[in-house]
Image (cartoon, rainbow, N blue to C red; front, side, top):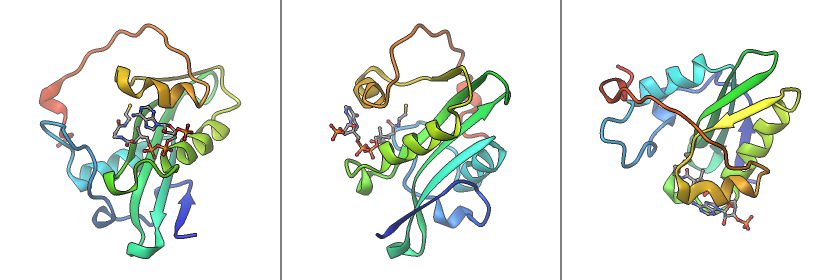
Amino acid sequence: MAIRYQERADGITSDQLFGYFQGWPNPPSPEAHLRIMQGSDYVVAALDRGTNDRVIGFVTAISDGVSCAYIPHLGVVPEWQGQGVGRELMQRMLARLSHLYMIDLMADEDVHPFYEKLGFCRGGAMIIRNYARQACD
Ligand SMILES: CC(C)(COP(=O)(O)OP(=O)(O)OC[C@H]1O[C@@H](n2cnc3c(N)ncnc32)[C@H](O)[C@@H]1OP(=O)(O)O)[C@@H](O)C(=O)NCCC(=O)NCCS
């Protein structure tokens, strides 16, 4: 199998991170992307052995370690979408979070069917977005 999954950010460098955050007006740089992964409580990354361990997908979670976790980022690079990578990343993350009561995330309406297949249900949410900070510089 060309893909290997690892459950930590150790050993990943910013040059393995490209092709993400497409359509974001002010996307995080690869360096900021790496900091996001390193600063998360849980990470699962999918690496493609065929392209020098490019990170072709990742998911992060932050948690209090007691009752809840929030999943702020899930992404699969366009060339690898639709091949089961997103599902595998989420299944691995959900297994790691299975001791917790609340597992929440935000997603655009068109992606809800993807999450419903993984057991999520729709719920209300209130959000603030500080777009001046979107790039995380
Ligand atoms: C959404 C995303 C993570 C899905 O990952 P993926 O690797 O392409 O999805 P998978 O191949 O694992 O798909 C698993 C299942 O979900 C379905 N699915 C995937 N994306 C879907 C979508 N946008 N809408 C509806 N169903 C979707 C697949 O058809 C598949 O169904 P099946 O089990 O019946 O075959 C990925 O497309 C992505 O990164 N998109 C851009 C960024 C994004 O939207 N991130 C989510 C932020 S909330």
